[in-house]
Length: 286
Image (cartoon, rainbow, N blue to C red):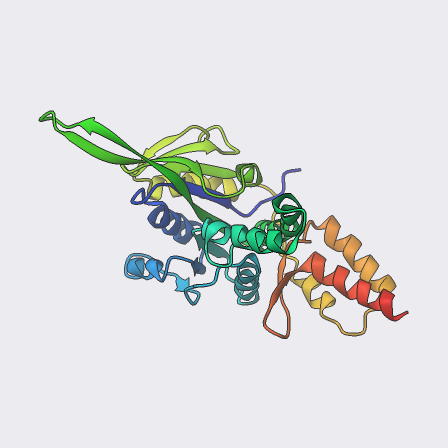
């Protein structure tokens, strides 16, 4: 039996390709309440009159933990669709993965390789929260850039920006159901999709027709209720170690370990990590 899955969409491209615009067009077509986690200094607000969405406070410090916290706030407010633009900033921006690796390597006598061992769980935690969000998630990813010169109709050389590999974890595309790449002509190529009608599809300025096809696939299968009941249970203060172990088993059966959960102190954590943390605390106290 096929179960209904929320959208997991990744769009990459160079500057001006239209990844943010396309993400907002998709998000507002497949979801009723859309939140944008803006890591581009408020750039999403430029489209506030074109699409209906709420913007989280623009971020200047883009650590993975910050993204988990923002996702937890969105889950708490029951937004059914979240756009993260761009995810790359959480990789190479202020507070991002590469900055954390640099800090860890300075603390480690063994250098950068041991630093990655320290930071890799942070990367996994961020991806777990993204993929475990109880609704649709669309992320934009920046490209590494190159410049080419091509002659125009008059024979004069015109310089164009082209996108190369996405900026981020090398195997990141494996984690997403829909992966599309865009270029400066606003053409989208679906390099990965779970349906034959969308896989390999080429769309110039993708719009309503493209969104309808994505939404059609998302609507197929048996609905799976979001694990808000498990989140409420995990917040009960009186759970024993045995009750936490039973809860963790049920969370795993529902594949809800990555659900972003907001703690009373305002910080975010995944549901699985929260249960494990509480269990470890009880074990130390016994």
